[in-house]
Image (tube, rainbow, N blue to C red; front, side, top):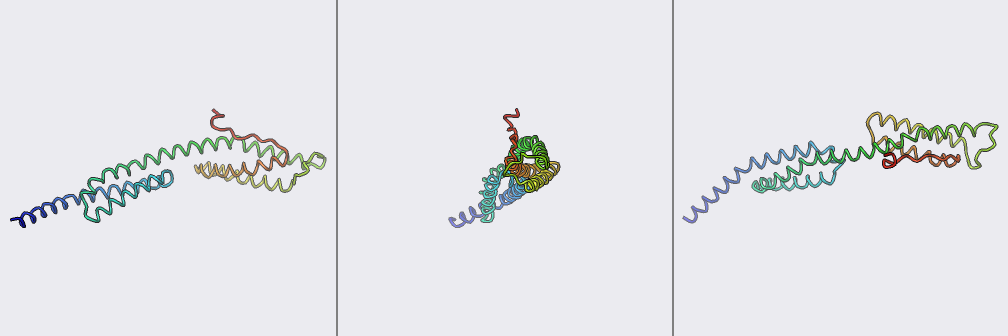
Length: 201
């Protein structure tokens, strides 16, 4: 009787376990699909959160492979919920990053064209043969080449902005600023710093 009871209990447990296999499998599939759908933006804007969810999913998958279907069914909804928050978290972080980039671009775009014009006018003035006030340390040919490089970079920055590549546009515009500042200093020109968002407000 004792042996028969053990066999019966084992059969019940096996049936219960088998009955949870399909729900466990469905949870894994849904979680995996959710992670894949969100991973593009999440990898860029919330990489640590994505890594945490992927680790939790890997643990779930390991439990499934060990036939711990009950464990997957119990823990799965929490992991699925975490996966579902990835897209929202990435979208929120993206908005935050884009706001900063837009503010940076607005500040740089407001001053860089004028700075280039000021340097260009100064170089034209210093290049006149009648001009006797050329700074002693100014190399006009090198300055003109540097200004040409800066203007070329600025064209790339504006093209990137027009294409919607804000991060590239801002990075390139900052490179322009880094070229213009020392150039202006060598030509004794005082440039205006880009306005900060707080100052602009």
